[in-house]
Amino acid sequence: MLATKHAAQRSAIKLSRQARLRRSEASIPYRLASREQKPENTLVKINNEIIFGGTNPVIIAGPCAIESYEQLYQIAESVQKSGAQMLRGGAFKPRTSPYSFQGLKEEGLKIMHRVGQELKIPVVSEVLSITDLPLFQKYVDMLQIGSRNMQNYDLIEKAAETGMPILLKRGMSATMEEFLLAAEYILNRGNPNVVLCERGIRTFETSSRNILDLNTLALIKEVSHLPIIADPSHAAGQSVLVPILSKAALAAGAHGLIIEVHNNPKKALSDADQSLTLEAFNSLMLHL
Ligand code: PEP
Ligand code: MN
Image (cartoon, rainbow, N blue to C red; front, side, top):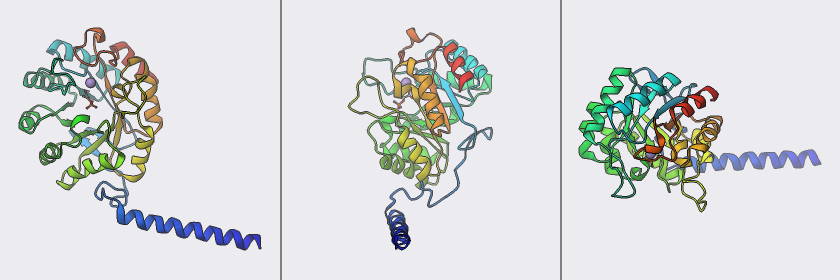
């Protein structure tokens, strides 16, 4: 009697699971980004040497903003020695205040290109405007779309049309669905080279800059085939939290990390509080 009842319950659960699956198949709005569309992981390659989405996490490190050739070279040489595979650095900075350092712009991209060539390390930088895309095509290996531009669909589509790999950061108030739909704009333009980046979201909590949403990172790995990395620096807003968030993100399955590192954080022109020293980054790499 009891066995029959359990069997009936089991089949009811099975049926409702199938019904749920059918419903989600019909209603998943991010079609190209979904695992239903493509069950296997997408691998995004940079210069045929770095692979996002495989078993080895990719570590990107560098300053928030490029400040000079000497600054970038010193940081790049050190983070590369510590094991970083890619160099980050902003040349066009989307600062919250118009009075803050806005970046070295084209000069910054030229510096980044030179350092990348000299040290043979691929480089990624944030593009803010469609008109700057030709410059980025000339000087960087990967385009970064920042949190503030995740829903700037015109920019995203034009960036996609370059065919370059794109690091798409999650909008600070974007839901998972909005994030994946932004990626969908890139895929829908015929560019499959999208790496997602969870960089922390805004909540009621004010004790840290943002909250690193590892729930969504883990969930995205279930529902999407796209690689996803984490940015513990912009999530934390303070360097002391960066090592623990880095380890937590990798434990949650992140395909890599993007970390802000500076040769003299106290003097950094942008995001000083969250930047790791060269030594702190090296020590973090030894413990990942
Ligand atoms: C950055 O990477 O320096 C940056 C501005 O990040 P976000 O767009 O996540 O704020
Ligand atoms: Mn920054």
